[in-house]
Structure formats: structure tokens, C-alpha cells
Image 1: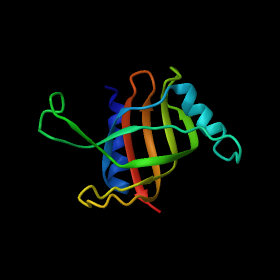
Image 2 (image 1 turned 180 degrees about the vertical axis):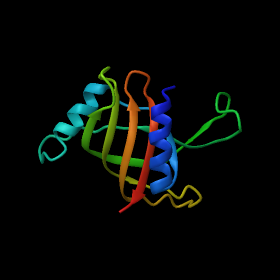
Image 3 (image 1 turned 45 degrees about the vertical axis):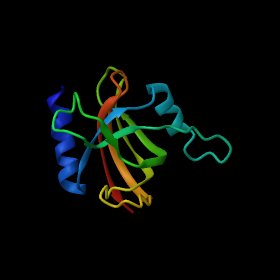
Length: 130
């Protein structure tokens, strides 16, 4: 794992709250397309990230994942993190329930920033309520 990714993620988490782990998501082309059409009224690219809110045991390799309730991603910015073309810094808006103890799972608008490795489909995600 790249140490720069950890450092940037830790800084973002300290500023805005909790950092979550991305455990699955779209291809790099789909991310760029979603950013390209984010302001379009006719053409919307729906994307989905699988974000781990918690695990059912302490060992994440054998535990079941409890996903963070998040959807309606609008990607407003994508920046290449390195020259590979697969490591991306993404920012935008979404609807999420960041309070995982709330059983109602009511989603509210949030701003987010994320590091995403589209080759491995992993990264980190930090959001705050708007």
C-alpha cells in the first residue's frame, strides 16, 4: 500500500470525521464518464461504491461486511494521483447515513472526498453532512 495514500487519507479523516474503506467500485472509465456528465440533465451515469462501515468480527478477511448506506453519487472532480491512470482523487456529492447506529438509515446530502484505485477497486472515503 502506498504510504502517501495513508497519509492523505489520515489527514482528510482528521479534518472531516471518519475515514471509511472502499472495498469495490466502478471502472476508471466509468468514473471519468460520471464526472464528464455530472451537470447534464439528459445523460446521467449512475455509479456505485461499496464502502465498508463495519465488520462483524475483528478479522476483516473472514468477517462479513456491513456496508455504509450511500448512493446518488455526483462526481464533480477527478484528479489523477499518479501517472498510472488508475489512482484517482475524487470529490463530489452523495446521499449517505454516516451515523451507522441509526436504524432508520435516513440518507442526507453529503460532500465527499475519496482516493480510489480503479485497478484494485479499493481506496478510502471521507464525507461530511452538508
